[in-house]
Amino acid sequence: MRGIYIHVPFCARACPYCDFDFQVGRAPDAGAFLAGLEREVSGREAELAEWTGSEGHVDKDLSDATWSTVYLGGGTPSLLGPSGLASLGEWLARRFPGAGAAEFTVEVNPEHGDEALYAAVRAIGGTRVSLGTQSTEAEGLQTLGRVHSPAQALASIAAAASAGLRVSADLIVGWPGQTAAECAPTWRA
Image 1 (cartoon, rainbow, N blue to C red):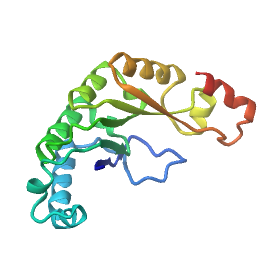
Image 2 (cartoon, helix red, strand yellow; image 1 turned 60 degrees about the horizontal axis):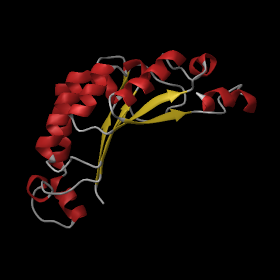
Image 3 (cartoon, rainbow, N blue to C red; image 1 turned 135 degrees about the vertical axis):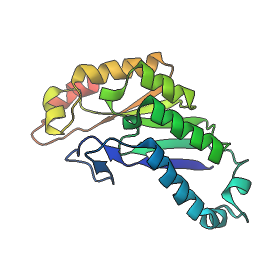
């Protein structure tokens, strides 16, 4: 089983619970990001070939590989927007032609999850979105430093499902000050 994980290290703001590597404060430049990604993969071709037991270049030896999963995580991949996701999808198809995985997931923040973004996810082969919902309660979202509203979270889930994508939603329970009884509304949503 082979999988590809691409870390998209951009966030609009730093959430207080997050320990992942990311940059805050500037809009992501998809072109610069893809150029850096290409340099990283090119610079590790020998290492990748060793891991896969092949000799030669990634382009030659992994181009026919079947990928079980592709995961675009972060950071916030949805900050790339539809055109940035399209560029990333084109790069993946060119660099790893067998990347048409059975499960292709893109992490999305609910405030970005609209029809255009989900159409772009589908166009690059996406089958699933992982929504950074975290809570469906306004107090929880504020405590967790999230900018979307409960209504946006639910609308984003519905829009993803309408686009034919499978949906997972990250939920954080036990945030500071939350009681066990207060967890129930999030689970029911």
